[in-house]
Image: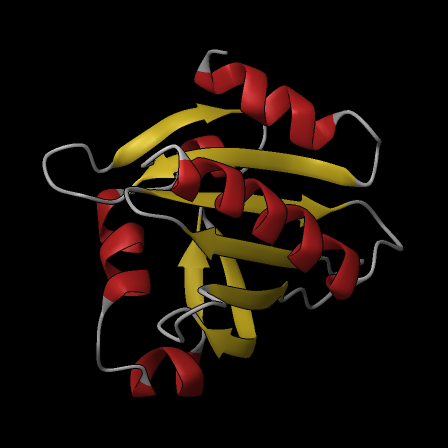
Amino acid sequence: MSWQGYVNSLMADGTCQDAAIIGYKHPNQSVWASVADKFFQNITIDEINALLNKDRSPMLINGLHLGGLHCSVLRDSLFVDGENTIDLRTKASDGPTFNICLAKANQTFVAVMGAEGTSGGNLNKKAFDMRDYLKKASF
């Protein structure tokens, strides 16, 4: 399956409005596949590096940017063995906000953003299950 096939699989049930597979190991730090014309296609190397920063304090205090979206950290288990996820929520002064989950495999992040009304728990499970599959395939 192509990388885009994994993104299409994440999007198939309609609970997500955006999804991506993101390489985080140098020299392959980039978005490998994403939904066209959405936010995750714009994720930068600096944003990837911010996620990987061992000093979590700035991110926990100030939030982070992801594909141009400003996000608050709800739960950070990215470096907890067996979990490897981070749950975020977009920030907006007007309009709705959305849950985001990233799950870290061996070389990739699985990123999903929920459609309006999609719970963080459902997103976390979706990202974690895909991460588990990719991790077993050494990605």
